[in-house]
Amino acid sequence: MASPAIICVAITGSLPRKADNPAVPITVAEQIESTQAAFEAGAAIAHCHVRNDDETPSSDPDRFDALMRGIRAHCPGMIVQLSTGGRSGAGRARGGMIPLRPDMCSLSVGSNNFPTRVYENPPDLVDWLAAEMAAHDVMPEIECFDLSHLYQAAAMHRDGRLPRQPYCQFVMGVRNALPVDRHAFDAMLSAKRHLFGDAPWCAAGIGPGQAVLNDWAAGAGGHLRT
Amino acid sequence: MASPAIICVAITGSLPRKADNPAVPITVAEQIESTQAAFEAGAAIAHCHVRNDDETPSSDPDRFDALMRGIRAHCPGMIVQLSTGGRSGAGRARGGMIPLRPDMCSLSVGSNNFPTRVYENPPDLVDWLAAEMAAHDVMPEIECFDLSHLYQAAAMHRDGRLPRQPYCQFVMGVRNALPVDRHAFDAMLSAKRHLFGDAPWCAAGIGPGQAVLNDWAAGAGGHLRT
Ligand SMILES: [Zn+2]
Ligand SMILES: [Zn+2]
Ligand SMILES: [Zn+2]
Ligand SMILES: [Zn+2]
Image (cartoon, rainbow over all chains, first blue to last red):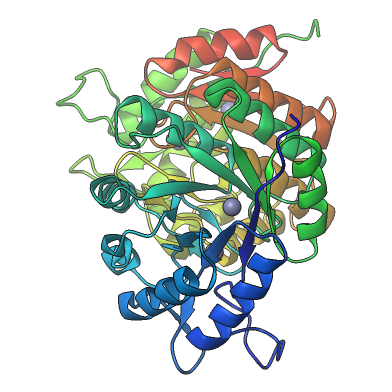
């Protein structure tokens, strides 16, 4: 209860571009600089996406490798978490960076709607990504966009597909998925406790929901995404 | 509280075949006979899928029309609900039977995983199906495979995409979606009350979960699927 909240910084995300916000770090050099500033301000985990030269999302392992090396050199002890999210690639290309052995990778275990499309995480791809992480000793952060995703993480932990106690992140505020609603947050937290006891967890609010979720998570003993 | 539970019978479903269970009604004539037996035993709603001659799922409006006419002739007053589920067709073909003006159609408002694939309900298709139902004065039954689907129904009701108070069905026990778990059931019911007050609702358990869900739903004032 008195243990300090861990702050996870998502320096780039998968969507915003320079045209939306000139401050968004896009190149690996910009990302490293921006991560170092967050690290010096107290962030303990760097949640990383990479981009192509034209700013579109990428899952190129070479770019992830350069980013990870830069963060390790400039932010000693910072936990590096690489995204396997579906905005950046399709199928097994989403997991091409797992053999780089970052500390953590994000892992979606279910499907849900996004603002204009289905966020597709087919069961066989989920199982393959989880197996790759297990094989390379990478700790997954389970991205929980809905209640069933917590249950799916529990089922995968029970049968060994997730060897470690799942570390779950509630993601709220994506249009057509779970909204930023306190009642829904409480349902997610209650299910987390039901399934994983007092295991650590974190929460991320999208867009204007970010500050609200940080508030709720800090008040309930969770870690934060900024 | 003292109002009797409404029993909704799913006579065929989208998957089981004669080879799995010789008693499954497949032809429209078999379906009508079996619905009449359920009607005489007290079922008030018939949840209908249709099949091709080779027993594969279909969403052929002509078959739905023949089935609906048969049920109306043999089961006077029975509510006919036609499935727009994704196992039977793709894209807008899923809604081809809506202009037949059945009493109800099922409507999925979000996506989730099924045992071997993603159950895809992209936002634009969901909106189109809801608009078709509104245009033909068909009452949707919202198939809620996850918590966010209740919230999505609420959002669609707020902005007029679902003109009527949503009538929601909790669907539990599909592998890779929400399991048959009392804690999850309570979370769904609590969200239903939070969003829709004491509006009627129902629950369906898949396979061995059916008896359990009927028990829970009956005990909590919901309607049943058999
Ligand atoms: Zn996190
Ligand atoms: Zn991310
Ligand atoms: Zn029903
Ligand atoms: Zn059905």
